[in-house]
Image (cartoon, rainbow, N blue to C red; front, side, top):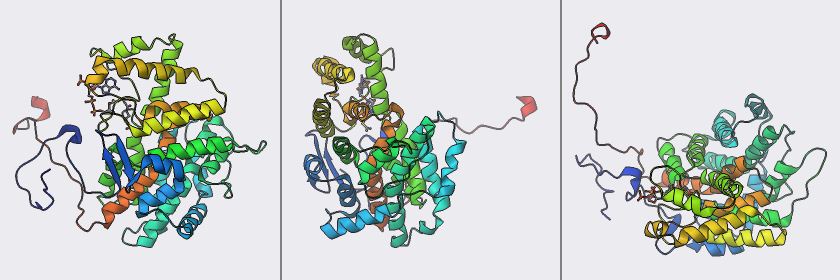
Length: 402
Ligand code: ACO
């Protein structure tokens, strides 16, 4: 790699790299990824070990602060989060204005953006304490904001957070409890959610994280930067693929489970159809997150004695695609989004909420990158160049002569 970090002046040379396939945008000490070998590590720890031994809040701490927390550190972190789980009462009235069928990702990005109107006291980027409070606010409030968007779509009253529950349990409680029927959180559900949040927590310079860094590089506040990241995540080529994948699996199941037809359609370049949840910009052998999620899916469905036809369709589709020359040549494998939706279904999460759950999981990664960027004295506003391909100089002809 050519290190151009010291070339501060305009050299007159522009590197064109559509889609930033080979362009490093920064140095980062947060996540290591080897796409050929299928390795993913957060701060040096293999994802498999973190998924086995940690809870999501510990992993959030690790990503943001760089080390696994001591007992005291994690307790302080957890209580800092608990302090901020409620959202301002005036903010609840926002939800009245959204149409009932609004996509929850649209609600999530709007309400997170609006946090900057309610919490103006934590937006000074030069004050580390204020930045820390903004981080606590985001980690604590995102599940509440997300659960309220679901309650809104159901026409049910919002449930306040219950702070004696842990992070994942609290989210499930706010989603599924009602004032007339309490909801006892199934520990298997909380465990599955915890694992999904961990494997989604960071993935170096992916589209939404790069967006958070891009927006943050202008010194925009943290709430605005995260709101932009949520917008980027929503797209079906990125986090929105989990929702698109389950829609696709449902379509295949309704079509008699004929996976070959869909594999053939994905290969046919006369249409735009792709196997959702397949392929990755960086992983070219396997996505370690998909392996973890598939095993967890197997375990959860067996434990719940659930026979989800979509899991069978997904397994059949994977089997057929992985033997197909087209997928082999292009190194297309199941990614993080291929099996996650089957787990969400088993937990009773509606399809439109899938990408919202991805956002809750990815938040610590966004925060870690935003913080890393701002702690680097050499960081500058992100401002790519272009190769201009438009018209050469033209004279303006007044409108009555055109
Ligand atoms: N189904 C069929 N063909 C595919 C698929 C797929 N899922 N993914 C890639 N291809 C093909 C492309 O058509 C292209 O073929 P060609 O060389 O004949 O033109 C080749 O594989 C390379 O694909 P690109 O789009 O150039 O690869 P890129 O790295 O830009 O895109 C991406 C990666 C967006 C993930 C892509 O594989 C895709 O669209 N997958 C489906 C959506 C998805 O699952 N997104 C989630 C990714 S993980 C995440 O963001 C959390």
